[in-house]
Image 1 (tube, rainbow, N blue to C red):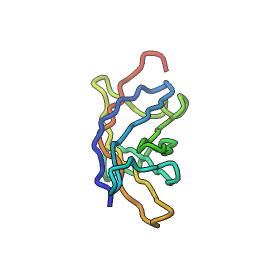
Image 2: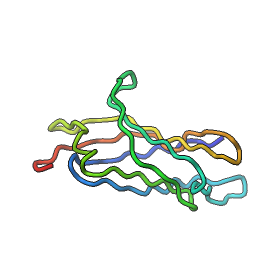
Image 3: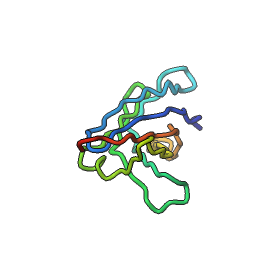
Image 4: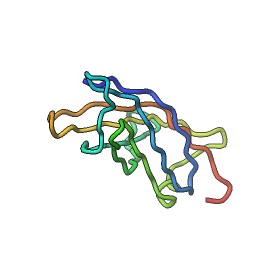
Length: 117
């Protein structure tokens, strides 16, 4: 069982988004977990009870990293207030060898407004 890492993020509507997060998660031998073979599911929402959920395109790296991306057209659809809108996000990974899903990352995503999307 992987203990999720908390990491806060920032995004701007109308701009391409790409972020590689090195989780530092290791296996029982202290080696970085190879997430490249995992199926990664990454989503965020303003409220845990909201029906509006946004998704990143996500993948894993061989050195315990997670890559999150979203193109400008998609980020433009994420609402932001003048003070910045706060969203909750989770990243889950499915390990096909262990046939298990684990929560890898969690945190707050702050989306700041842009003058020109």
